[in-house]
Image (cartoon, rainbow, N blue to C red; front, side, top):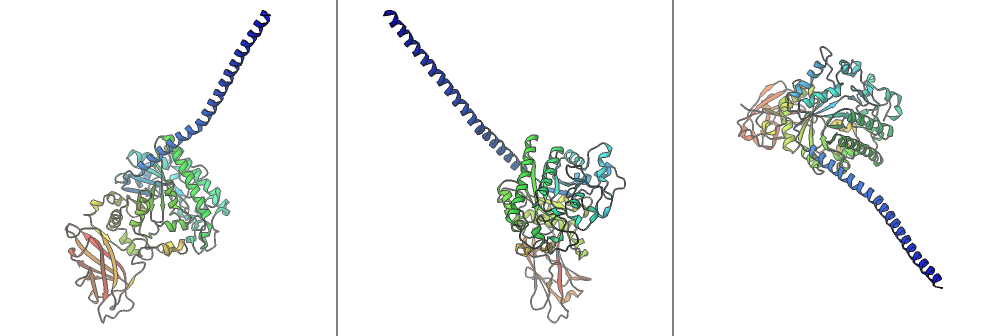
Length: 549
């Protein structure tokens, strides 16, 4: 009995211990499973937090880099190999790079060719071996001496001289529309991916039939491939996406129809991919890679051709805004407010003057005096820098690159104020209904003023000089549709009637009392005297020259 009881007690004790051990094991297993689940749950959250922090850090670094001072950005279209006596690397650099290094250029935007045809070797692109009108392109052979290619050479040279470099990609350069020798092999093989057809005349899109149609994924993929390749293999500081060469990206625009929201979204998706690529390479390098865009200076015009620039800036996809090109639709102040509202610096693009129907007036606007006045006007509107496009054809020693970056120094330099340097009619050739986006008066040579004795022609010029205070002299020049005696005109500046001027053909030159010129808006009235006999006389141009001792 006692033995049996002892066995029962022993079994009960052992059962108790066993149950306790089982509970401990179960608890341990439960704890282990819970811990594993917690860790598994925490890992994505922790990873997400880390990635978010890295993304924010990159954004902050980009913002800081984007807003660093850049007084002058210089665009080089990559035609450095033209007009060389001998095809050597030294001569290649001497053409534009060496003169640039002697200026105040902060940023070089270097273009290596048209869309998909480059002077540097690039994935899924054609090597450029010819230029306009089938002329030989020597730059492609630059690397044959064992040194870097065109883009690598410019990056090395510019960095050695303290100048940052952006690879400038023309988002739809269509010089090949008029020159068949420039049409790439890819375009010839993929005509269904272009917006139009050779030989067909289109009402809009500036008849740029050879533009790639960004509605196709294959087109967008090519752009991403090129940019990825450049960012991986070249130490560029950023990308410049030039949407002004040329401003046609979707087929409807060519026919005068509306670009759809879906097409705008397709372009935005491309910009997102390029942003991801730039940030990925920036993280690898340990410093940000910036993205600058050059676009028309109107949010509405941009959206109408498929560029949702407001959205790009709201999403933080771009870092720098360069405005204007073939035409300018708004005053500079409007563009400054546009970019700054989104925290993006704004740069005024001063393209080479174009009045091809009036070469004499174009030549005048190529002068350094006009460039100084244009630059000062942009600076006083609040731009963050000046961007010079096609300037190498105006000045071989790049004089403007030495001067236009300092608004205070410009105040005491000689200038020539004009009513404009670029025609706006080309905006209408690109986009149906473009006129509704125009909020500034076209320049006089494009829209002359009729002269009569009944009502004076009124022209305004904004002058930023303090002429009298700085000891300057002022001269007004009028260009008329025909030669007439100055004695037949009544000319007033801000209400002050000028004395009879000097005639030189169709030009009339009149001295102006310096105290009559305001710092700000100045009004010029030009009319005929009563009884003057002339038919359909027009005021075709008005220039105000300011000279200092």
